[in-house]
Structure formats: structure tokens, C-alpha cells
Length: 104
Image 1 (cartoon, helix red, strand yellow):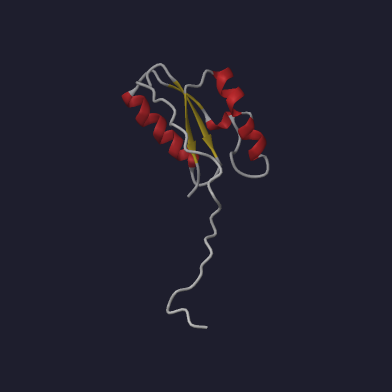
Image 2 (spheres, helix red, strand yellow):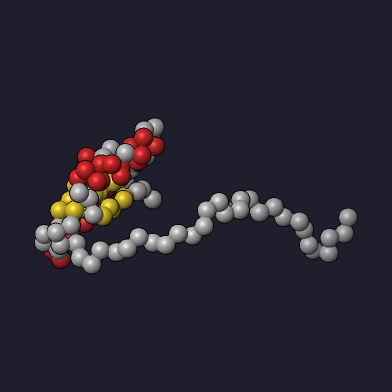
């Protein structure tokens, strides 16, 4: 069989299932806003969120945070159920924005 250096290849990626959606609008300021922290409980998120809170509060002193402790892990056996409840929890807590942390 002579391929002259050309071979058939298989592209393992499936066709795109959804179209591109527009990004959510951005908040003009974080002052007076409530930010939820969600995390997969891997790689020092507790430390990272503490540093983020300090830095963000320096620039936006009236920002409020809802700790990652309120939401449970976004990783593992219960992640699907936990994430499915986020919208309802965010609304009940008056959350305006979310910082989602994950391990690398």
C-alpha cells in the first residue's frame, strides 16, 4: 500500500453540541454586592479564598462574601446534586457573583 506519506487519521473530538452563548453581564462594582465562593475542596482553596477576600475588600470595602463552607464540595460523589442546588441557594442568599475555585 503506497500512501505517499499521507495517512487517514481519526479526529477524536465530537461535533459541537451547543452553540456559543453570550457572556453574562459584568457588575460595575463589587461594593455592596454579595459574592459566593464555591470550591472542590482540593488544593488549598481555603487559603486562596482568604487571600482573595482580603484583596477584594481592600478595593471594595462594602463587599460581602458567602463562604465556600455553605455550599459543599463541587467535586466527588455528590457534586451533581450540590451544583444543581446552587441557583436556588444563590437566590436565597442574595448572591450577585460567584468565585469558583478548582484544583489544577
